[in-house]
Amino acid sequence: MEKIDILFNKYDAEVLKIGAEATIYKIFWKGIPLIVKKRRIKNYRHPKIDYEIRLSRTLHEAKLLLYSKKLGVKCPAVLFIDRINTALIMQFINGNRLRELIPYLSNEEISRISFLIGEYVAKLHKGNIVHGDLTTSNMIIDNNKDVVFIDYGLGAFTNEIEEKAVDIHLFMRTLESSHYNFLKNILENFFKGYEKILGKDFTQEILKKVEEIRLRGRYISLRKKKI
Amino acid sequence: MANESSIYKPLKGGIHPREAAQYHSRNAIKVFSSAIEKSGLKLKDINVIAFSQGPGLGPCLRTGATFARTLSQVMNVPLVNVNHCIAHVEIGRLLCKCEDPVTLYVSGGNTMVLCFESGRYRVFGETLDIAIGNFLDAFSREAGLGLPGPPIIEEYAKKGEKILDFPYRVKGMDVSFSGLLTSALKYLKKGEKIEDICLSIIEISYSMLTEVTERALAQLDKKEVLLTGGVARSKRLREMLEEMVKEHNAKFFVVPNEFAGDNGAMIAWNGLLQYLNGKYISIEESFINPRMRPEEVEINWRK
Image 1 (cartoon, rainbow over the protein chains, first blue to last red):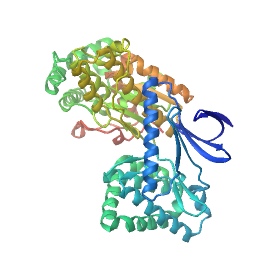
Image 2 (image 1 turned 180 degrees about the vertical axis):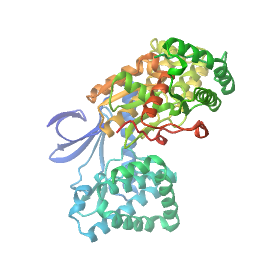
Image 3 (image 1 turned 90 degrees about the vertical axis):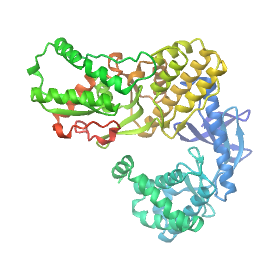
Image 4 (image 1 turned 45 degrees about the horizontal axis):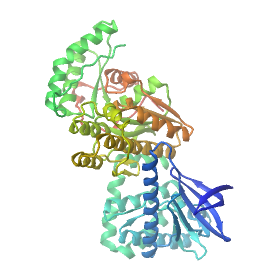
């Protein structure tokens, strides 16, 4: 347990994850569990630059979460933004990370979830958002057995097909490294779901782009190593 | 060992590739002779010639390669092709005695974060447009502060008081400086205090470099950071990296000043490593490659 400053108060917080840039905490507010994503101060940066970067990234992420929800893609609701401590206070999602869940799921369940992920990613892409870090650790299966995307920290608003293809490529790369045995099933249904939203032509186009990206040297070798 | 050099300095404006190459061909023999003299070796003591294959300015690389081919034929010794960027990393590893660092290589022509992964040096992040040295030199020249840019701008920055608004461009592990240059020149035209502009661009551009290095360090879970290239001489950049590295409980190394910028010793050392592990080329294969990538080179001297 750690004490953190949020919204002019001190809270007991449980550290869930420490990233390169931010720390994820779980707090209780009037008995309700909440997630706090707080971007840390970097001492090497000039204080003014440091604050501006932390603030703009926090606001940017909040905006992405908001738009994601509008597009019909489940993600944590942003409840408060603490501009002083550059923190996002979000809904706590009850459920399990897909990464840990996959080995316990039936093939039919994996197919269903993969189809859903395909649909959601396509919805984001259709709305010109890329998630930026589509790993199975960033997907939570909630109590309604629906998929919830978390961590939009690397996301962006873009209409470039290249960036959308990178999004898919990153997803494929985590599958290859962590869920190799389910790769075929997941990808097949993922693209079925993707095609349902964005159509056959666009899906073919983006697949070509993904292939092009994967043929660039540094990705090929990374993939080889992971397998 | 001898590490001799003679550096082309344009009278005004930036580097003109043809003139730089002509300068190199005029001075090659002089530099070579003084290196031989200083090292106390005889020509017959030399058993391998290394040259930089790329990346770099085509005409200049060609001059160096031609000179190297000639030497190799005259002395009848093998020729080794060296990647310029990797040579910077290798001389750093040798002199700083570090094992497996995340390397930030910053110079007039290159800005990249390199690390050794499965048999090759991989570029984990790099500039999407101009190099840090190029950016600072261009600004310094336009502002009439003189060259080289980084130390002069840092000197002015010490008297700066406020940070102006500038774009901060970090995309994943890549950086971009061209927008910073444009805004800096706009501020200059508008009559902002030169000290403030200098402070802002130094703080912002070095923060960007430190951040991408930090990301690579955290993602790859390494324990060492190496700073190399001409801009490695910068005091402020060293300070920032040192602070960041401390937070990650890693070790920080900087290449000694003499070997920070482009130098012959690094090409020779990397050439030697390569040659001892049986990698050299024939004259027919010794094309230069101005856009050579570090990933193209199979590293046979590291595991």
